Length: 270
Image (cartoon, rainbow, N blue to C red; front, top):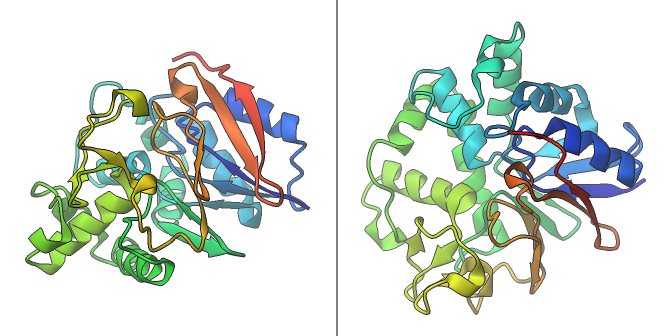
């Protein structure tokens, strides 16, 4: 039995199937950790989402920004935008079932010294604090007023720093952005949600979140995705696995037991 963490799939079903063949995945024996963004941009979002649902306890996934976008589109909070490949999910006969399953996925998973999150953890958050924030957000997403929560999460610009949060909604907006959208930070640890490029093009005033020291979560190993231009990257116990499959790169898996990496070239056409 092995546990494999897999980077951002984003609707690349054919590449996913090939990667699973490469690692020899056996449902019911092995486990898969999916770092979020199962869907969108790639050609087969419906297939990926249904496949993940059908794996049962063999799959553990966290929510990414594209997954949250689907939830917002499904409930009418946000429109479909150019480049989205979500219509097949919305038109599927089991759409309600798939969306309800997705809505009840966590934002953060902890097990055996590992944390899984889509984007990252703020350097000031230790594991316990991050888990408590994630559970509060999950309760809002899974509760009866989840549409209101999604509306509020995009109603105003996201605060760049915790000190700028002046209401419970501000804190929720900020914490959700850290977990699902963060890449780079300013010297005062303020979020920069605009930069999406590689490390060697980053302004000297910005720093990748995982390189900021001290980092309160450094006692855990972390697996994440979200940053395609970064590629597969390992820094101080953080393993970033988004290798840009949907952009023609590859899909990457990390075996948690020995941190062996596996990669499958992109096979899906956008």
